[in-house]
Image (cartoon, rainbow, N blue to C red):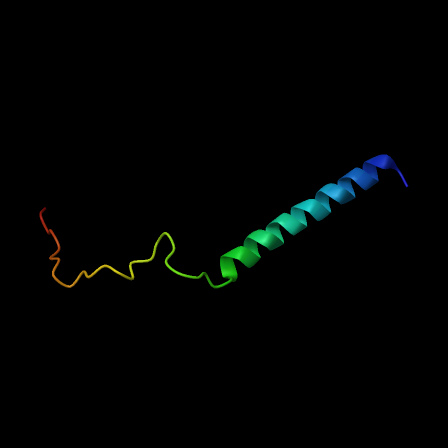
Length: 52
């Protein structure tokens, strides 16, 4: 087998593993509050500012 084919195959496998890992991490449940979680904040007394 040619060395270039082996290098391209290894790069393709590494890219596929990287994409699968990113997809898996984004779909799995996160424990606790993340960056966009507002679990401890009460927004009930905030009024919107509608100035135009």
